[in-house]
Length: 516
Image (tube, rainbow, N blue to C red; front, side, top):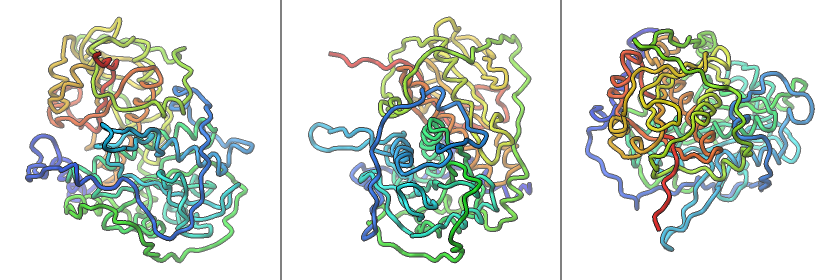
């Protein structure tokens, strides 16, 4: 890949590094009274109520790690309105409402979001399915309903936009995830473009898990013509952008009844997307540089799969701890876990078990099918770990080898203070049992995939992070995602991680009990 072309990604990534990225040096403060309304509200469109069925199915660990690779026979291969309602609810629906000091009610959703700003929207494009006519819809989590934006079967538009991707071509339903930029940049400014994929990925981890529990085939699609998808969804592209597609289900016999290739902006009226109107030029630059405009770009994208082998170099004093893949730990249904999930705000310093850590690492890194990976077993993200308190495991720094399902110790010792520092000098990483850093050889990914690879690296890491959330909460362990000092994370885990960049950070541990 031409170095001049991918320099845009490096400029953005380096410019948004904590603490001294040039784009973070601009004076800024966030007034919580400016918090944008967390819902996109359409005016005068037809709405379809979604069933609020919350029955439980497959266990959490199986749901996040199993993958429907082959076509499934029977009715489960094609979702109906009931299963669509469950997928949407457990991906981005309201799972709890908290009243703060009797002054304000706040809705929390199924997946975590930076700053609880909820800037990720979900749309649905489908043919005729049981209970729902073909159309383009927006998911309204507040009303638990679908807003109909277009009537008719527009799946062929997405087939063309993805250069005839086979999973999109045979999917009865395709979900599209978007980002309303200013809802998050009001607080996080230029770093928002990282957050877009972090928050989208944690939602997608829920989507994949619920689809797996229904035996529905899925695939995460990042290769698409941006303008076509945005136009189909009638987005104000200066404020809202498409991030990813997920085709759901498979029906080889299905035919697209209507050919509606010509799409025009509808300019459907909505409430103000955000009361914060600042447009960040650096976000515009990285998004435009990583956008696709032609089918040939999609074809090229799919031909340059990432297939990175796990590192075979270890620390000087190599100690390899094999982890057990099959654990009889929990049978908590995935839906129960999602409803109970939160973001832990205080850890207790207590130990979690080695068995629990084994299960979290193994199941969180399995079963992701993405169009930039050669096989769903391959991953371009490496996990580096600080162990503070795990039973029968020495405190220290570790590398997780996914292919061997083993922990390789890089250095023994107590690193609670260092963990706190790396997590932006917060107490949570030092108090937690384990800190996991999801790291990428960003140089290799950009060389192979160009600027679009920046999106892929961020999204893949956050999907794994979302699975960690679910795996932890299914075992009654707390978890939270945090930001970090970029260069210091790489330096801390070097020389093993010398060419890698931190994409995502998770802290796991037992929650501190409130004092009486």
